[in-house]
Length: 261
Image (cartoon, rainbow, N blue to C red; front, side, top):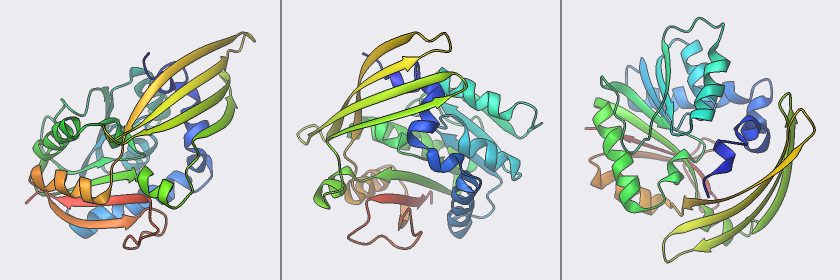
C-alpha cells in the first residue's frame, strides 16, 4: 500500500494537516521564522532548496519574498499543486520538480536547505536519514545552513498529548475527504506506524475508500544531533517551533538548525 495522503488525497493535505497555513498570516509567519533562523546562522541567504516541499507553501512564499528557491517533493501530485500555486505569479526565481531527498542534490550549491512539516521523518531509518543529510550537505555551500522541522512523537507520548487513534475531515473545490488514523509505536525499528483510511468524495458525489500504511521516524534531538554530526554538520540551534525560543523539556515540535563548515 502506498501513501494515499500524498497522492489520491493530495488535494486535501492542507485542509487536514496545514489549516494554520490557510489563515491570513499562517504561512507568512512561518516563512518569517525561517528567514530569521537562517539569517542568524548563514549570510547571505539568497538561494534556498526546499526538500520535501509538498504543496509549495514555503517555496512559493519564500520565492515571492525574493529568494531563489528550488523546491522538490517525491510525490508528483503534491508538486502539481505547488505548480498551480505559482501560476500567474511570474516567479522566475522559483523552480519546482519531482525528486527524492535521499537521491537529489541541487545542481549548484545553495545558501540554505530547509525541510519542513515533518517531511524529514519520511526517512524512517538511520540509513535513509543519513542519505538525505548527505544530499543536503552536498547541496550547500560552505557556511550554508540546514533547517529541519520535526515532531518528537516519543516526547508527545511522554507528555500524554499523543492520540493513538484520531478522526478528521476536510472539504474543498475538489470534493471532500474523511480520514481515520490508527497509530502504533514500533520502538524496535524506531518508527511510528500510521494505518490510515481515507474516504474521498469526488465532485460527482462518488466515494472511494483508500487504505495506506505510513511510517515516520521516531526522531529525537539526540538522534538527529548524531546524524547531523555524522553527515559533517555543526549543530547550532534546537528551537521550540511554537515559541522560537530554545527548546525546553516540554518541547515536542522542533526547528533544528545546523551549518556546513
